[in-house]
Image 1 (cartoon, helix red, strand yellow):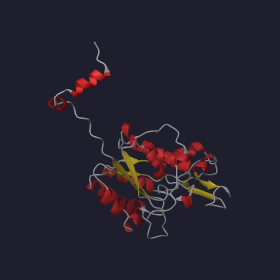
Image 2 (cartoon, one colour):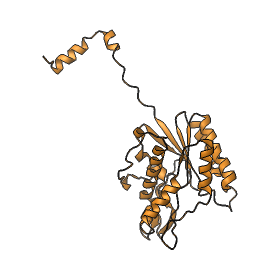
Image 3 (cartoon, helix red, strand yellow):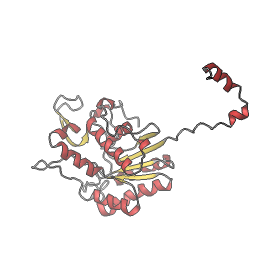
Length: 274
């Protein structure tokens, strides 16, 4: 004869304490792990005065499950060198904990040969600076991950997407292989994405604006480097899928990789709290 719900509850309440204690304990909650981003303006947090410009780091949480959080330290205009020289890597390494991830994406500003504060040479100083991120994270029990620079929007006369980062992606790939660092090849994946889209549709992903589209850009904007929400979301999807593909994240760590994400989910704080 089956027990009623009330009888079942009463029977459980009458169990001796020793018997209750012998029951399996509930599983401990999973520790929240943090993905720290060290990078440039393509990944950085943007604020209301720059909207609709959007960094891909703003959209990355949409593709991660709740036990993972994002701490975005990417800053406009920084290179692998200037980020360190300005003291920006040190607080990241102070905060990072065993099991956390350090995502490193630099290259856009490392190319600026006319600016000695930012310029690095791909096969020497660029690699030397990247290695500081790698060794710093590893010394603290965290996992460094190198991400090649997301491609700019550039097409040749035949409508073919072309590369703009010179030897920097190859230098990063070589460093990752030599030192056993997980690599997400965002440059290759994004170049293929812009090729599939073509010259005109790809403008919807970048901060291309007509006059009057945004009060922040009254004269319009033709920006082939930085993203609008749609582009930032897709690059964040590339990053999350790459982390999953590299085995850095597991199936339980990611979500929505094959689902649309509304651009309305992107919001811009009113000001930089720093």
